[in-house]
Image (cartoon, rainbow, N blue to C red; front, side, top):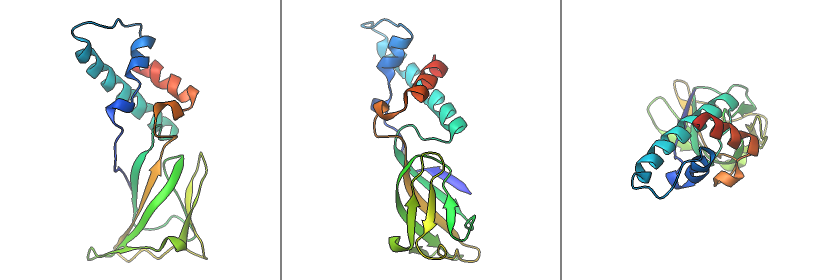
Length: 161
């Protein structure tokens, strides 16, 4: 199983000003941009820590899950939550030929803790021998920092400090 982050969070979405206020740092100094770059690094490290410990994506972005087989014939748990949508499911055979799977054959079971892709019929599409399946999806609490639950946002601030 490989989980690949296909898009990243823009620096402008991160709460640099909130962290600056949390640390009670001054503003208006000549080297403020240098300090902000350092605060961004601290925020990214803290977010990565919280996300890895909780299995949650704090800010919405794209992911790709690549598997050599489904965990169960009728469903597959997604390793990151909450998932807002599945964008595509693609099978790749041993020769590298890709086949997009019709969205009518699968559905998202939206769960804030354990989302899944599930078959709409009896089973999910068969993964080719020596091939793989890729599930492209969007996960995160929302597009902005304001959508992050207060307890997780506070954990990020404490770790970044």
